Length: 72
Image 1 (cartoon, rainbow, N blue to C red):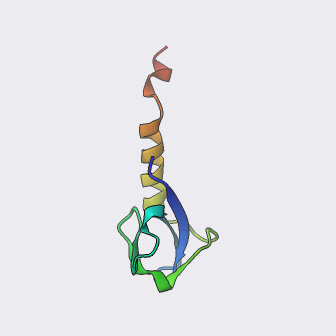
Image 2 (image 1 turned 30 degrees about the horizontal axis):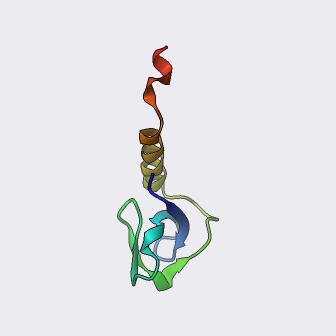
């Protein structure tokens, strides 16, 4: 599973899922490929969440789970 942080983008006022290993870079790129300068990122998870990021995080979670639990 990829570790993500939910941060608010100052460009579109949405909360996006950013990979945690991006710390210290000039730009952050969310899972949905939304990119924003780190100066425009607010470290808060309050606000409207990006639907694309939500779906991508959900997909990553589903990959971690064993899909065979329904087969029995």
